[in-house]
Length: 471
Ligand code: NBP
Image 1 (tube, rainbow, N blue to C red):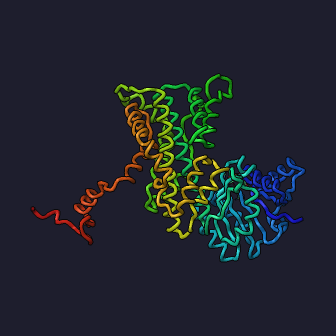
Image 2 (image 1 turned 135 degrees about the vertical axis):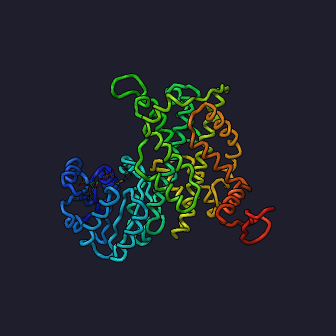
Image 3 (image 1 turned 180 degrees about the vertical axis):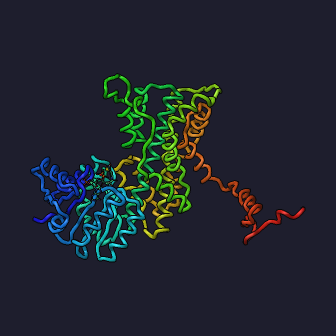
């Protein structure tokens, strides 16, 4: 049997995806620029149905037609380089798939260029890290629908399965839609991590709890509404001790400089382009940036005064309020993420199905969580829902938890513990539910210095005020 699909790129993701596909009953062609990596995959897995090739031409020729080729190489120039190498050997109707963490505008460009040569191009988000790739990731494919139909049976088998058995993959939309949704997924992931990290910081530095106590709290939280992969691994991380010998918790030995690979920044940049409020992801990116300024922070910590006010609270009550603040903030973050996708869907003409997107995030991916079922239910009830906050379930949480986040924000500010995620969550909530914002004064200022004009609340039209005339 000729291989039904081929994978280019035998680094950790490509290798694991190839093994995943093979495990679902397919024969998989594999190729890597550096041949020794391909050899190693084959020698490490001698009994698998893998067909190695050591030239691009042999690789392409080994495949069943129409060919399905999945690239798992470094995003950016390497992806263009691999496409350029493959292209002369492909035939019209073949399907090229990019599973890398590609910027969606690159996918839009490649889709158009390849379409002109009659080659189908799918850009798919793949989330779940190494283990997800091997056991079943959440997948977000975008491109020609007919092309997706040619790979759908394989994708549905290789993807993670939600509790109800549904595969965590669905056709997202044309051209760059899949990589766009993956970008937002990663941005939301930044937000989730930031909110969890702020909660940890409050438990540690405002309440003075030990790492072991905090591990237990996260384990407990993971049994309820917050049940999710990220809370689960956080609880686990906090139980782990130094692997190099001391008996200290490993978190206390890890340098507090947050790295990033750019997907959060892309989400924020795109939100600014589209004119969508995206404060949660943006604050999460900034939180990483300020964390990297370690030397400056250490110096500033020695000269800038701390708050001096006295804090009074009941510990157990505050722990529960932090939990509520975390869940409330998470809801604001997803409300913003889905709002951004709604605006993008119109802007790029993608017709995104939000309920379907929430469904494929229920398993396999890094943001998988019980709460995604609530989002799925909200969009099932009303596919045209303007904002998640307007759904009954989320409205009710906001009603029950808003006082807690207000209390926590007040306490944290008083304690001097930074909470950019929590504060942006409550500010977003209060802005969104405000019938009147001070943008009336803003418009007056703009009109005053720049004659930018304004609308009035009591009549139609565009107005300019005679600011420089004596009254
Ligand atoms: P890397 O992102 O580290 O890429 C390494 C692969 O790219 C190797 O196969 C390498 O071949 C190939 N490559 C490079 Br670099 N330049 C090339 C070129 N000019 N021509 C041909 N091949 C080239 O691998 P990864 O961590 O497995 O990730 C693969 C993709 O999946 C990336 O886009 C990544 O962002 C995405 N992703 C990763 C994760 C994760 O958790 N790691 C999750 C989701 C998505 P060589 O062996 O010859 O150097």
